[in-house]
Image 1: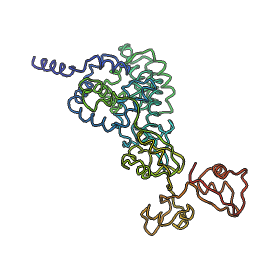
Image 2 (image 1 turned 30 degrees about the horizontal axis):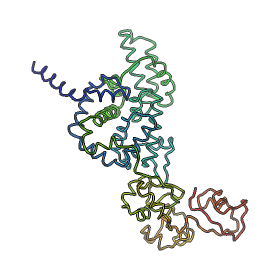
Image 3 (image 1 turned 90 degrees about the vertical axis):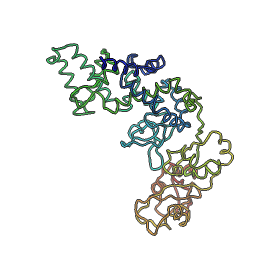
Image 4 (image 1 turned 180 degrees about the vertical axis):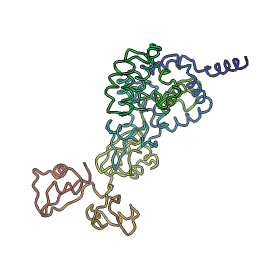
Length: 445
C-alpha cells in the first residue's frame, strides 16, 4: 500500500507544472501528440532544468546576446517554429567556436560535408560554420529541407542530429513492428513482414548502397501512424534501438528547453527578456579588401580587439582572406567605420616552397625581411610547407615580365586566375612583352 501511495505521489510531483496549455502548444508546434507531455523522461528532464539549471540557461542566453536576434529573425522570416531556437542552444549553447569530438563546429554544429552542401566556405583562411549569420541561414535551410522530407518537425529535429537515413530506418522499423503486432502470432511466418525486415537488414549491412529500397518501403508504409513515444520506446534485448541513444536524449532536451523558455516562471527573470526581444541584430556586415587586419578595425572603431574577434570567429587568422571578403562590426559603429576605414597595410598567408629564402619571399611580396621575421617570430631557418604571415603594403604586387612568361604562367605562380591580371591591368589581350610591369592582385580570387 505504501509503495502505491509513494508511486502516486511521485507521479503527481512529476506531472505538476508540466501539463500546461503552453507546453501543449510547444508539442503541437513540433507536430508531437498532446499525450507526450506525460512522458516520464521528459518530465524528469524538465524538472531538472527548471529547478537546478535555470541560472545556467540564463547565463547562456546572456552570452548569446549578439546571436539570438539574428537566429530569431531567420526563423521568423522562413516561417519556422520559434522552438527551433532550442536546437541552437542544444547544439552549441550559442557559442560560435563550439567544437565536437566528431569535428562538428559552430553555432549549429555543421559537419564539413553538410556545411559545403549549404555553401559554407571552409579553407585555409575561413570556416564559415563559425559565421553566426551564414551558419544560421544554412541551418534554417537544412531544417526546412528536413521538414519537407519528413513532414513533421520532431522527425526533422532528430534527423538534424542523427541524419536522414537513420531516422528513415527508425520510422520503417517502428511501422513494421506495429504491423507485426496487429498480426499477432501470424507475424512470424508472414511473407510480407519477412520481406520488409530483409530490406531493413540489407540497409543495416550495406548502408547507403541499400538505402533506395529502404526509402521506397518508407514511402509505401506512409499510411501507418506512429508517434514519438513509439520511436523512443526501449526494445529489450536489442543492441540497435530504433534511434541512437544520443538522438533519443537530444529530442527530449529540445522539448524540455522549449518548455522552460516558454514558462512564465522563467520569463520573469531579467536575462530571459532576450528570448522575447526584437529581431534586429546589433551586428553589421561590411565588405573589406583582402588581408584587412582586425587589429586595425579594432583600433579605428575604439572597440576592444577581443570583441571584434568574437564577432568574426569564422576568420582563422586576425586578418581577412586574400580575396575580397567581409567582417562583422557593431551596428552603432557603422558611421565611424565609413569615416575612418582607410587601411594602408594588408596581410596574407604564404606556404614556404622548395628554394625559398626570406629575401626571395620579401622581394616577391614587396615587403621587408624584418617585417616577415617580426610577424612570425622566426628563427634562423625555414622549412617547406611552413606558413608565414606576410604583411603587404598593397593588395597588389608589381611584377616585371621575364622572357618565357605568359599570363597563365604568372597567374599559376601567384595562385590566382589569369583573368584577374587582365582586369586589373586593363589589358586588351593576353599578349605581354618582356620588361612590362604588371600589377598582380594578391589572392583576389
